[in-house]
Length: 390
Image 1: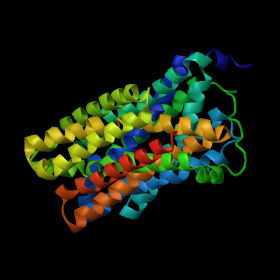
Image 2: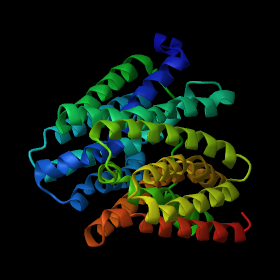
Image 3: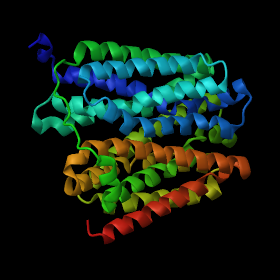
Image 4: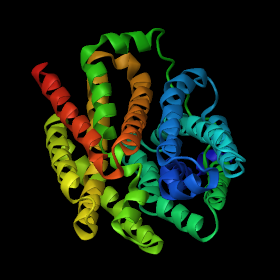
């Protein structure tokens, strides 16, 4: 055995959290710099929205596909490869001479994102005793939460005071720090994941409860995306200055972090019941946005409420999918987990696309309509799952 086994688990989790911070920052960074991308490439706002939806598509495809392909690669080697790909993707985005190359860079980064979440979760769970696994996974995910609070606003600030190119260069640099930290602090010789049986995708597709849970994840999580994708532009339309928008994005991120924590506690006992209440509240806020989003103060209050509710559903959606798979197809839990990561990003892609169509055909302040439809549909799916007496 090498002395890498003596690495403190807290240091390994710190390294993973740094990488998660970089990955979390890049997912929605284009939301903050979208107006600059519109000006740089002389494209419409709806077209610029592809920077969000195409990224989500890359995660959607990459998570299950790469989970299958990379199953036999040692975990430390794989995490280092993932972070290298992530850095390359962001540098390609930063140097993009045209919008097509920018989208290619986003896809490369997205492929790294999808597989990172699965691998980092396994590593976090394997560097601590069995009775601390949930806490270890939560610690690793703090990188994503911190990215929501500070990463996107920081990228927006850099874009406004330097250029949008530098926003992606900065994220690549943070990814490099994560790569070095992973190299030093992630131990070698970690246990390999159990090899799933052939046909897991088909089995999951044929299991109604698991399939419905994945659909619920996509539809429900995506309900905030039609508005969130164009958040910076909406704030500008409301009359907020660029400097104020950065502060608002930070406050929005804090609301997201609070909502995510509260959502986890609410979903512990009965995830379906908690999710129904969350989506009902989200639908009410989105309906109110149809009337108040264009008003500066009221619109801002509604945006912050959206932040509180937008990711509140994430713990419940993750928990229910895992519970359903453990009950019906325990051998396919790893693939179901990867598919759930895909489902989150299917929701982002669908929501941002729907929002883009509304922006193009009707107007920016009508985007909540798409979110309302998705939230209501999520509530109907929950009703169907409840009737199955899960």
